[in-house]
Length: 287
Length: 278
Image (cartoon, rainbow over all chains, first blue to last red; front, side, top):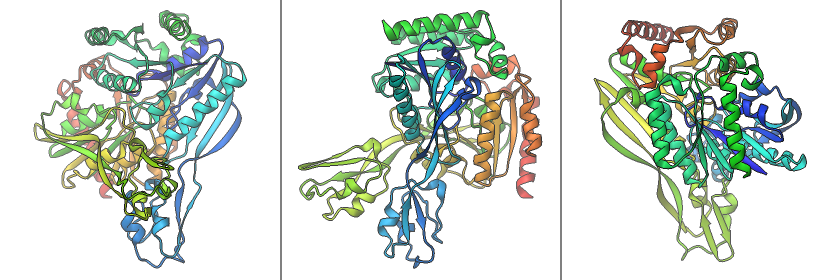
């Protein structure tokens, strides 16, 4: 079984539209949306949920005010500023370490399970999908990404799927690293803007840090041909293959509004270029 | 006054709004809190004259005192310590610096080591007080870097915080405590879906907020319908324009080329200020 993650560093470069198009093109794949705090892939793939499991992230402190004697030890020792001076818990700051419960002399604090989100296993018109929803103001998105990836692997084994296509989150931090570790190929989607180029450099650093093979897609390459040349020469210098260059096309937004993949929506140039890119990617994964 | 700029979805124009707003006003402190992918200084080119490494505490074990009892690893919720019969291992990248291991150790065998996770930089650009942070590549914990940035807030200035995308911990750390939040979105299904998530977070944090629609003209009208229904003010619409997109791609804040927008950003600020003082 192979795994490919679509990533970008900078948000809004077209990861999800491209991943959805790949879903259209892949024959025997499981889809995994690892952008658990702002997931969008389901808006196009319209999954029918077969199974949902509550995700318990980190635990959370629960303060029994009737027992509290106001010694403030918990307030003094919490390194996350999650307890205020009047000994109220600041839910969104608590990282569930358990120090407060440990130091409380009267056992007024207990660590309890915390519902941090829901993980889904679903069916789409392109095959099975693993995805999730992190609850409002919750922590541990990296852990939830791991749950999604494990679900995807489980489905792939059960249904004898040969490939997992992962839509990654923006950034370079915790959930991104969870989306990347151990995959066979990383597709970095960038665009010819100075911001995206800057972010491309950092996400490439992350891919290299974890010894992952990376290839590049330049989206909207025609909005600034000078910058596209910069990306090309940079990739050339670093010996990174550019597997696709996609033009700016309003069809991408039109397809999204119509809740279809670009491949379903259009037979035009951009659809053709994505197909070619997909052939290259599968060639790299399976040859 | 502190105004934070957030979005849910990435790439909707947070940094565009943050930098153009900052350049249209006087007495501004702009802090780029997207420490994973900071972009504001691409538009400001503020010369950096101060750099500070940000480190977190990680446990350092004195193995002459440790008897490998395992209490620390049992306590650690993050699996950052592993004790085997004759040794103890620390996994620094998993440590959240809660301090629990040191508290539970019966032999005082644990002290603190510093581990650098990123840095913050300070610069000035035409009177604009600028900060940003950079999480080191391969690090998972953006929070300590964001916290360090927020300690530099100068309250009597007009503080603008550029937040990271998403809705989870780094966003909350960045926007929490601000007087007003601008949510930047685009009029597409992804934009709307993630806007709704961002609205949930900002309402949860009880911060007054309004919406800016960027790339107005693409996609559909449902974002406006949603805002109307939810009684969320639409503060500004930035049109989908080749000129603006091109300036963005070259790292040029569009108010420098389209000066009529300076007044619009000033009006926006005044509107927000009036709203906050209410």
